[in-house]
Image (cartoon, rainbow, N blue to C red; front, side, top):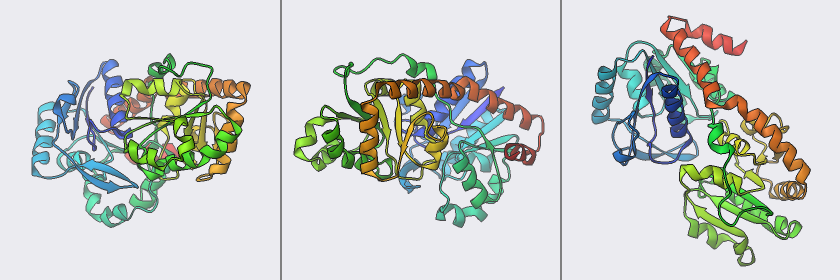
Length: 379
């Protein structure tokens, strides 16, 4: 099957949608499909052989973060050329409501088109205001996929339609046998954080606020903090007696993400809101690292209502400190969570997820009604 994937955000800037599109493309290719991706990119040399440069994107605030998207005549010309040259059996656009190449592809393409919605934002003023303008393009979608129940609710509330629920995938094998970073070999009392360190909703400030009490309860505790952002600014906010306990390593290469998880006794996700899914929780579980996460609906679903990971009150440093101290002091509890996590994440392995996506491709190319697909998801 010839599959076109439209990625809305800049390929060489870290982000969950970009990783999703990359992993989907490479899993489809490994399964024997012919795949091309069109995407914004800052450095065209960063693109893999299966990807096409749609142009350079501009940063815009969106959903509590900053996304890099693009529109305009140059990008439209590139998207039109890409569609003409490949003659896809199915076009799969990601975040079709974002002002980027996915929306352009919907406007310009005919034939079987599928949209995947990643964002969970129940009070999106942008979607509410733009609904009428987006409607002609969105009506071209023969099927809609949501990566989470929260993303599906956003579609229902803003677009008046539903979607098939197919979660994000994770490359289980890439995380399964990771080795710790130098200096983090057991025994240790290490908690890791991986995310944008200067994006408030990722919750690093909640973890740092929990550190004084956590250090009192677990005298040898260390924090391993990885992710893009202003490391010096974060370090300057730390109390001087605690600075030696926090290792701020900045942005790590993709191939080292698994090593960050493997370097910790517990992975902490202290996010404060607007999370659609929680792929990073699955990555930690694939690495065999127990998870402590804020009790967001999306995280609770991924962690099987707390059976595959511990939950604490959103934005509650005292609860987080107590929970982390309990886990760090209980080897048996951590081992049990690691076993449950590995068992759960097997169902999210990309080859498993791709089977469900290819089923949708086949249904729409065979002329199936998207209403029946969405209804099947609600059944």
